[in-house]
Length: 77
Image (cartoon, rainbow, N blue to C red; front, side, top):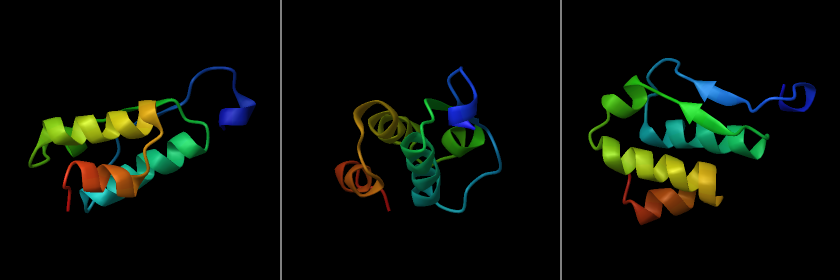
C-alpha cells in the first residue's frame, strides 16, 4: 500500500492486542514497511501505563528503535 499511494500511511485503531509486545511489533513492522505513524485508542488508554506505551511507540516511529530496545528501555513485559 505504502508504495502505491502518495500520502503518509498510518495504522488506525483495531482490536486490543493480547500483549504490549504484540502492539509494539505491529507498529515496528508497519514502520519498517514504510508506514509513517499510528492512531490508537484502546491499546493505549486501556494499558497499565499509557504514558510508557506512548513513549515506547514514539521511539519506534520517530527514532528507529526495535521492539527489543523499547521493551528493555521501558522495562515492558
